[in-house]
Length: 64
Picture (cartoon, rainbow, N blue to C red):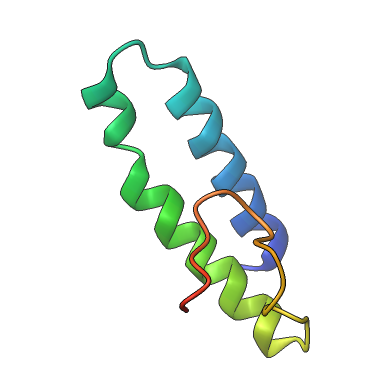
């Protein structure tokens, strides 16, 4: 996936999570949001972006 596709998929997952009405169903999105955020961070790092600053997208871990 290129960066635009990853950002789109991440945004769609965030919208899906926000539309759910129960905590259990919202929690189901956590893994995919975190995985997409990790891939976005990795691509940004490979492209020379400063990834040691604040997170770029929701779900991103600073420990990647």
